[in-house]
Image (cartoon, rainbow, N blue to C red; front, side, top):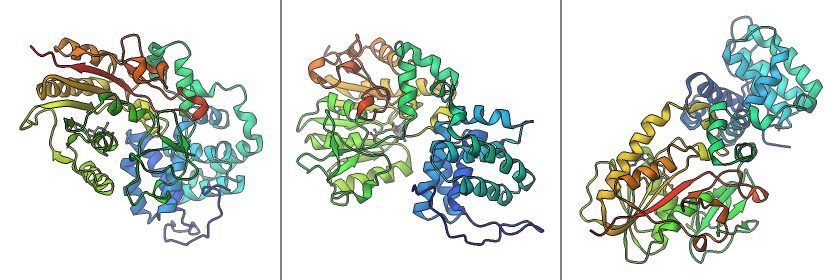
Length: 443
Ligand SMILES: C[S@@+](CC[C@H](N)C(=O)[O-])C[C@H]1O[C@@H](n2cnc3c(N)ncnc32)[C@H](O)[C@@H]1O
């Protein structure tokens, strides 16, 4: 039985309207509903709603985790859920009602929640949210969905439906069949990957991947793995390990990590014995970066600054620029990205990436190395930025198959790295990353 479907002891709270019976509290579904309304109505990222809603609803960690899982499953299948519901609706319901219906439907079709729980909790949710006039509709529609079950999904091209059209067509530049492979990758909940500190043992139950990452099934709680408190490893998707690895930092080199939080790549760089400076602009993320590096006890100089304007005291041997981006490559971990990002967002993002590239160039010693990386699948943020970097006078330094013998399919003819969620499908996939390497000419 999943956490989502486990029966809950009803608690009474005063959320009722006059004349209505008080509805049992259900922080999991309240928080999931807030998250989904945030995404659908306000294009607000899931993480931005989660903490606020969880504290408003007094949701303990277990409910918070279950809400995250329920919201993520709904977002992962949102295109399909809309189409499944369509024949049962005679007129357009208000958007929050549709959100509640999609959430109920996701529980029935994708999360194995018992029908009485999925239907009953959706009806209660609508009553708690002053949407009682739609409770009857929800009851009728979800009962029909429960009766027909998985037959409703037959004949639907779920992969195609669950990816917004602009993203699907933008990914066609990555190759024939790649958009579908990416969509299949995103349709699965991502596993937990960790990077071991050099010499640390593999925690029990982990599968060692060809790049050295250790993989655990989706839903594994990292803080419960032995060695977490002692700093034996950190959370990092297998693909996310590649940019820092390809910088090939050496002991004693001075290395900057220009967009550092939460610090997975900073930790990798520090583990090489290089002297690392981590720059991060955002104060909250800075706190996470500090906590992570303290747990790992890596001696890193941490600077809170805008890397586009920050001036270091001395130039660096090597720089990693893991630039802020649309993050479409992380959609299997963050399916909200699919529905929050818009094509127009790319204009500001690419301008920021160019500013950071120019600033990074100015911080390099002659002959120094730079890796530009983004967790984006978009052409504008990857190849187009690599071409912009070359136009700024940075010399391309292509990656070679010898550097990535376990993932040569991710090397492009230009010598760039391009990973996507359809790769390593038999092992559980990986996030989408683009990376390109450059050197600063000596004269
Ligand atoms: C893609 S994330 C970095 C992930 C990180 N490299 C890791 O591996 O854990 C981008 C980070 O850059 C930070 N950031 C965005 N703009 C920045 C800027 N102008 N200067 C410094 N940091 C910035 C964001 O707050 C965010 O933490």
